[in-house]
Length: 86
Image (cartoon, rainbow, N blue to C red; front, side, top):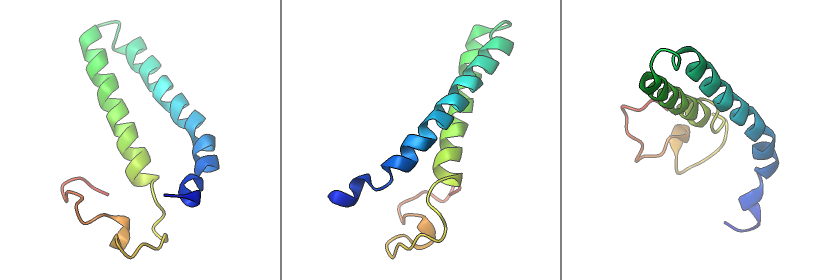
């Protein structure tokens, strides 16, 4: 950690409203469409959609492929499970 720990704070501050809007919009759409029929199904669908958004933002939008890291070849840690795509 140290002085470089907050190097990406501006980028995170810029992307946070976009992520918040995507999550909020997903809940509004799911609860507005599925929630009218079955509230439990809407909660499950919303949770699955949020899990997918989390996976998408971490894996697909995560670290650039060109970011040099000798400890993680291909920017995938050695401990990362192979069944979860990264």
